[in-house]
Length: 374
Image (cartoon, rainbow, N blue to C red; front, side, top):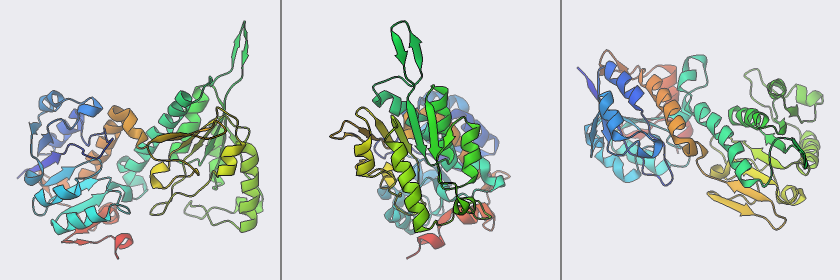
């Protein structure tokens, strides 16, 4: 009885998060696991080796060849896959649409790999929803990064020397990241507006004290499916909405874009013409920069300053800038997911479980996820 969990040190450039904390290590041990933590795995997230030792883990140099279950933020590197124990299970944010060579390497190594991106958004899986936990922090951090790049204050300030006007912040996309960005900008005292293609978002935006910006005609009111997804809008509606947004953007001090489409490049929402219409000193933060960007001219890992003095912030891995909290939330996502893989002190997954079936990407030497074949 018993099984071994390995927590690896992340090797991707700029990745500061870790897949387990001392708190989750204690819970894994209570489940009957032996936990191996690669030396230095938590240093960048302020979780030193000593904390893992105190929690009962063994801190070692090599971990992959000993583990039944490997936990990671971004997955092992392609060259590490061959070191995996035969039949090992790997759970990580695998970026499966872009990291196809890694998936092939994991399949070749005989690993069963689960992509946390594919955890279904159903009630039972909410505690495992790593995309949401990380997007929440990304939305918060986007506002902080914008404040750093912006040369003025967010809140209105009335002083003896005069009044400082409140910053105007516009959030495009009112999903998890967008709603947190709205809430954070409001807490800092900005005048906040937001847009989204889903009618249900209007109430959510208003509940946070922000103004909702959209062409609210009959088509818009019918723009959501029974499952809660946005419908494709007509070209006429798109043109009308684009004109409204264009007029709104030019009055803003800060624009934050959050739109992503799973498996496809991020939609282009802010054009060079939009950027050119903004005031000098304005800031745009593109949360989708790693997936191609919502903003024309954004570049991963860079702050681009345009000719008219607008700063386009394209910081990669925003949750990694709050590494301790991001790791704590992600580690709890993994702990919950691992409860589907290990029972009564041994690895015993129910391969027919709807959550496991949705997240499984490699098994039995092949890539098995339908959306990734070919």
